[in-house]
Length: 170
Image 1 (cartoon, rainbow, N blue to C red):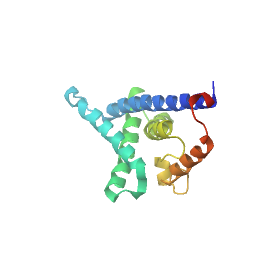
Image 2 (image 1 turned 135 degrees about the vertical axis):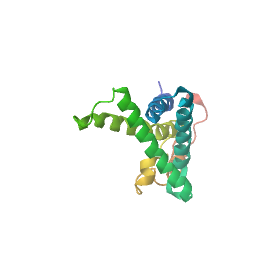
Image 3 (image 1 turned 90 degrees about the horizontal axis):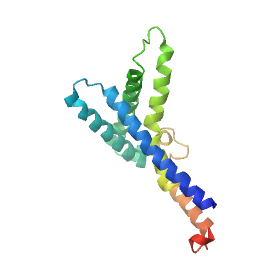
Image 4 (image 1 turned 90 degrees about the vertical axis):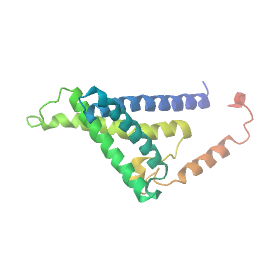
């Protein structure tokens, strides 16, 4: 197996895992939306998908978007994390947090992970290093906070692969 083939498999795996994590996140988010009437369950799915799309749009330029997109993007992450936490908590049988407040740690960590990880993982799988992400936008100065990073990495890749004419040379 060549280095390039290995890299392609890793990127494909990252994209597939990101999509699977989205499905899990959507399910917990719908459960966290917590409408007990079955005829309103579709609203939870619609909101979960809409929140995901808003998060992807927000990740494109982060704080460089209009104030409305920035606000809606951040609120979407907060909503997604909160509904994931609630959905996981419900899936655990709604343990009594007054007796054991630590019972919320697991849902909080997993809920955060399920909401924040898929977008940058998918973008990395599709585009490579230097992709934009939520934490990069919120904490300026980190990789991912600058939109131009992707172009820098792409140029470096072009230089590295210059002279390679076909797949056999990889």
